[in-house]
Image (cartoon, rainbow, N blue to C red):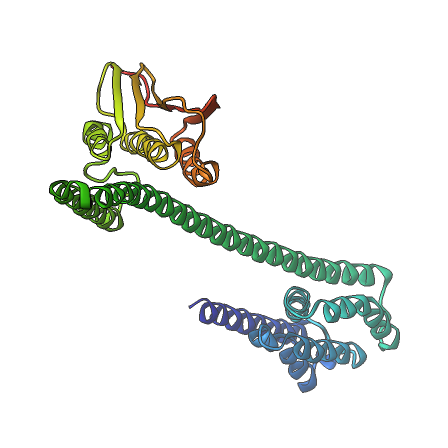
Amino acid sequence: MPGLRWSVVDWCLALSLTTLAEAELAVYAHCCDAGRVNAAGYLLTLLETLPVAWRRRAPVPLILVAGGAAVAQVVLDSPVTDFSKVGVLVLCFTVASQSRQVVAVGMAASTPAGILAAAMIAERSTTPYELMVLYVQFAVAWGLGFAARHLRRLDAERVERLQHEEEERTRAAAAAERSRIARELHDVVAHALSVISIQASAARGVMDAAPEQLSACLLAIEAVSRDAWAEMRLFLDRQDGDEAPPGAGLAHLADLVERFEQTGLAIDLVVTGDVRPLPAAVDLCAYRIVQESLTNVLRHAGQDHARVAIGYGEQSVHLEIANAACATAPAGAAAGRHLGMKGMRERARLAGGEVSVEDAAGRFTVRARLPIGAHG
């Protein structure tokens, strides 16, 4: 308990100063001038040193008591001991460091005048040298007190700044986590809903003309819904945000292509280079970019053919997803594609890579480069 510890320290300091001051006064009475030492002198010395024990609770009233006792000693021509003077200086330091600043400054400014006034009304004359020593002693006490106040304020500002920075980091981490969850859920849900929409349209088309194909469409809808639900549950249950969920990675790219081909989208898959496992974050990023790009082809391009090229390099993996050229795209295609492209760019940025798009003559191409480190 810091408060109790400092209270014990203050009591020890106060009792030590009191004992030494009273002892010094007794020695002075015995050896030097017994006529100047009386009961009032011992009492006033006690009032100068003992208040140090409570200096942190009420420094301003206590310094008035101790200072008044010191002035009374000077006026009554009672010896002022070195240790009682230390008690008053400690109280000056406490007022400067802990009291209201305007009060501390006012009392510090009035100290020289108080010392001079006490010296002028004293029975014994005070030499300029003695006055100068007193001024220096009190100036040092007040100066150290104001310095301690300044250091304490700087420390409080530093603690506040660190707390603010920690709160900012917490908010940034929470925002990044929300963004990551939004990207994952967008990719899973958008892909599933696109496939479901295509299969539902196909089911409506064959309902009367070819009822025997209706079952296949409904089974495809059921399978996609089940897979999307399972992937969402696995994602939400995962503790590691960079770990790819089961079934999401370039190793499962053939399965992804097969699911899209079941909707009627023909895909040419080309893989070149030294195929090898990728870092989890890069693997998931590459898979999601391919998935989102094919979903955009399915939803927006109005095409039934796409090309996916994966190139494994020494220090990076290159992706290219393109749909065949067409004269027009469905209305709202650019607006619908915007969120998915933003998510792809953010994924690539977090993985240390980049994504570029090219839209020329109806052919929409997504290119991505993701770093994977040196191989071998």
